Length: 466
Image 1: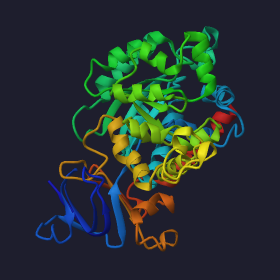
Image 2 (image 1 turned 30 degrees about the vertical axis):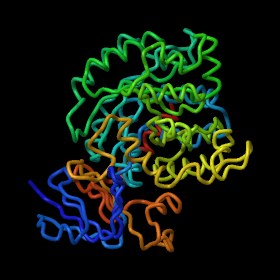
Image 3 (image 1 turned 135 degrees about the vertical axis):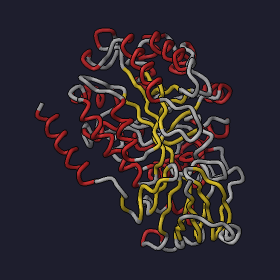
Image 4 (image 1 turned 60 degrees about the vertical axis):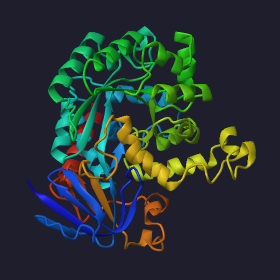
C-alpha cells in the first residue's frame, strides 16, 4: 500500500456534504482512496510515502462529464450554421466510414482533452458502430490514459426506410445490439465502489430507434447491478414534432411509455420540458445532463436548469459531441451554464429576485458554486456513483489542482473557486485519478499527446479520402 500527503493547499474546495472550503488544506490518500481531509495543521501528525506541496494552488474534485460523442472530433467545425436535423443528416454519411481504429484514436484524443481541462470521469455515447467498430476500443483507450469511464453502448436501429432519421447504412439490427450489450456488460461492467469501468445502455433517440428496443434495453439493464440508461430526449422542436406525428405523444410521454423514467435513467439536453414534466422527472428520480455549448451551436434553446434544480431534478453537465460543441472542456460548460441561466427569457426566471420581466433573466438564476456542483456531485449522481464527485474520507482519490498565480486569475484571491468558471477556463496543473498521477505541472506523465495527434490526422485523411 502507498500513501500520498497533499498539503499547504491554498484553497481546498471539498464539495462534501457540508460544502467545506478550507484554507491551507490537506488530503491523505492511501492507494486509490482518500483517507483524511482537513487543514495542513490537522493532518501534520500523519506520515506518507510521498508528500506533494500544493501551496499556491486550488484543489477540488475532478469534474464528471456525463454526455459526449468522442468520435466526433474527427468532424469538428463542420455544418456550422444549420439546425440539428440538417447537421445530423449531413454528418451521418461521413460517420458511416468510421472503423475501429478511428473510434479508438478519436477516443484517446477526446479523453486527453478532457483530462487536461479537469475531467476525471467521463461517459461516452457511441451510438453509431459501422464496419468493425466495437465499444471495447474506447474502454481500452480509457484504461491507457487512466480515465474513469462509463462506456455507453449506443445504438440506432430505425433507418430512413423505417421512418427514422439516420440512413439505413448507419443502423444495426436490434437483436445484434442487445446481444452485444449483454456481452459488454459481462466483459467490462464493474459495479464495485471505485470501479474504473462501467457499461451504460444508450439507444440514441426517439427518432432513431424503435419503442421495442427502448423497452428491451431497459429490461436488460435492470437485470444487472449498476447498469444505467441514457439517451437524448427533448433536445429539439423537430424531435417533438416527430414524436407527436409517429407516437402521438410528447417526448417525455414517450419515455414513460417505454419504462424510461427512474433513478437509473438520465437524458441529454431535456430542453423542451414543461413544468409538469419537470415535476415528473423529480418524482421519478430521472436525471438530465445540460450541454449548453451544443444547445447554443444549433440554436436549440436554453434548458430550464433553475426550475429543474428547484424541483429536485438531478442535473449534470456534458460537453456533448466534439462536432456539436466543438471543444471538450467542462469548466467552459459550467461557465456557459451559469451565464445562460442568467439571461434565460422565461417567465419562471423573470419572477426570481432581480428578474426583469418576461424579456430578461436574473443574475441570481445560477451561482458559480451551483454550476460547479453540477459538474461534480451532480454528474456523479447521474452515473449512480457514491464514490466520486466530492472529497471526503472513503471517496475515490480523484482530484485536480489549478495554479492560482497566473494572469487569468489575478485579482481573484477573495473567491478563487468561483474564478474557476467566471475567469476560465484553465488547464489543470495536477490531475489524480484513482490515486494515480495523470498530469504533473501541466503535462501528462505518460500519454504522448503528439503521437495521438499524428494518428488522429492520419485517420482523418483516410476517412475524408473515402
